[in-house]
Image (cartoon, rainbow, N blue to C red):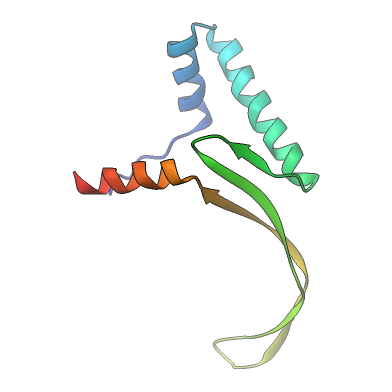
Length: 100
């Protein structure tokens, strides 16, 4: 496994190289896209990126849990969680990367 993490800066640098916008414009474009995705998810909408996958927010109900250390019961409140489902193309691409 590679210990590299793709950052916002890496994305804006890629836009700078591929599209030819200035570095500031590239960074602004990346920020705008990420803000739009975040805002849509906060509103409860799905974010579907063709050939990549779908981000969505799922509602989880309240439930009873246990502290694994003490075994004591604890109430877990309802919450919203972010989920990601990769597309079939993304799954295949990642699987092909495992073969090399």
